[in-house]
Amino acid sequence: MPPIIWDDAAQRLLSKEIIKKTRRRSLKEAREIEQQILQESRLVGSSIYTKMFQASKQEPKEKLALLLGQLGAQMEEGTLQLLGPYQIDANMPPHGEFLRLLAKTVQQAYSGKVLDDPQVHQLRMYLDRHNITYIRQLFGGQGITDEAALSAYVRASKKSGGLGGQKLIAERARFHNKYQHNYQPGGENRKRLTPDFHGEFILDENGHFVSQWNVLEFDSAGKLITDFDYYRKRCGTYTQWHSFQQQILNGESFNYADRNDLVHRRLDILPPGQLDHPLRKEIAKEWKNPANKVEYHWKKADKQKDGYSQRDLIKKRAGWLSIFLLIIGIAKRNLFRHR
Image (cartoon, rainbow, N blue to C red; front, side, top):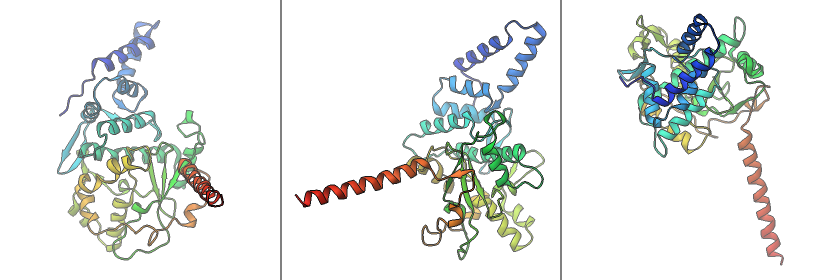
């Protein structure tokens, strides 16, 4: 297992934080505060953990190995298992600072390269699980759809764990509308992203999250089950099995890239075919992605304002700029012809 010990720079920061918070406290209070800080330092994504990760002088790939070691990452029959002792902080929001820091670290570690480490790749699905659980537990509840909870997350203040009114990015969800035989238009899944592009949520036509975490199970030892035969036997009917596969294949996928570009292709789009867990790889053999603009379209229903998301403003500005430059170019050519 990779080492889980922080380097000197990170440990110095931890010591300074403890000294700062325990100054002028009684011995009893100081010990309690110290224990609290040490416990929080074992929660990936907590404030102190994020500061330590940022302060560390290790190289990007060493930082990733450190994180995976802390989470007890092990590959077992093609599936990443996280066995502790560190846990992902339940209070870290999907737009959390650590997630941006992690994404930047992966970008640096695989600069100009396709991500080829199955542990780093499959870590994304555990971040997905964290994000949808966060939305459901903090903003959901009985009678509240996932979409309503997502909307509440957008409206909630940053102090209470929300986005403070900053809207999600609405993007096309072509890769999240896979089909087996004949593509049936209508009722497509929709994709929403956190403003930093990293956190991703897929919604069906009824406002429910589409996610492999709706159907995957853990065994008695707390290990994720990804055995094909296990789930095939549990899904007794064709309808149950078909629905199960849709959840596995069409769900969300945390992005290490900052936008839909070549980095996104190298880190997020290309790796799944080779590095996904065996269940998803086996099921994917019989499913296809709808052809863009032929089968899959940016539907009117998906363009409608929902109050909590919007198209990528950078793309929109770039689009209008391209049109403006095109018009200027045509005008210049016409002016030149008439001289």
